[in-house]
Image (cartoon, rainbow, N blue to C red):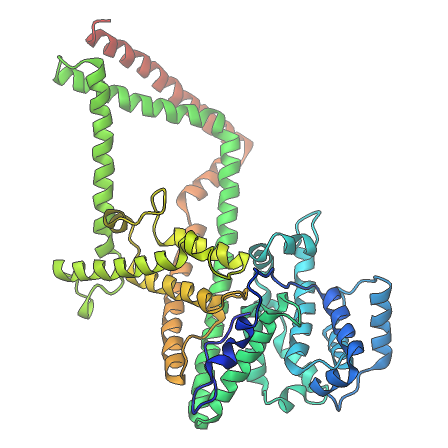
Length: 515
């Protein structure tokens, strides 16, 4: 779980050792993610209670609120007899957590884990279990979890906790704060890990550090901070939901394309090839007629040169596109002049080189990253710029494939967040950056603006995907068997025409070369 970027209590700060202690105490060997399913976690909680009842009772978040023993006995019987636990209600799980003397945050994490497992179980691919998905890694688990943060009844959980000895209020959480905590937990993915994992411990440390940091400020300042944090979490969720819809629409469009290709591919592919052949033959004939002395080899070279000219032209367009795609080109929205563009490119190159240094495979293999973190950094390495073989970073290559400055800054922030949580698997987007309240305010403001822009972009992409004219045309082509027959006949007629024309053109080209 992500480590909040706080440092500890000396004045308005929290000491570095306080927030880094978990990571620094970790062994130097690479640690596998400490995933835990509900059954394993319930058994682990029971084992902790039985191993040291006095210590577990001292840490309990609800010592004055005894558990319902009959419900506990029923759950214990289910565990011992390998019975079903996926259907356990939040009340059942909370009651068992109280029986095991879990602290407040672990109680929430345990209940959220149960709700998550109930959410993903019906979404499992045919023939697979949750254990299978966990074995595939964190990315596969995240894919399966899409939409969970919007589906969970966080308000219902708050009422449940308050109905059990005012658990939320007694730990300093009103309803809004509790809902934020649950959503932040899900955003940070701690529900996927064991209760004893460094991911959850790190999240709790960060949460407590954040609340400690706000104790020394006025109520208005604290409320403003929580308001910004709430907006940030809601926007993260909104963008996540939009991305899920975009992915689903993209998959639907791809299915349409695959179905269209399986329906018409047998005639469409030869048709496209014949069209390309028609264009090439016309070009060759025109060149030969304009220069009768051209040999066949020279004509081949000329056509190759023509292709290279087109590629060079495309490269120039890529470079020029940099100035065209900036959202705010300069002061007052005016386009950047040549000198400003040079400065813009220099800043992009500087960021790219920093990203390159922090994500280069040779570098990350020397550090104590988890396998998931290494995979993430390699993806960022490839995202920054399509590097040449061997991992070079040439100025010309940077210019031709350069991302926008805003994109590079966002990418660098993600890379640096992975470095800060080295050895602990997390969603770096759930980490509030900054060591002081002022820095965290600034980070939240910048992140909120970026998310609002991203939300608009994703909405536009989703609208474009839904109304994709090519996709709509493909659907129309397959509307009925009669329509399929008609389109197939039209393509066959076109192919026959091109085939006849190509034979005529090949004959003409042969005549020009005296064949």
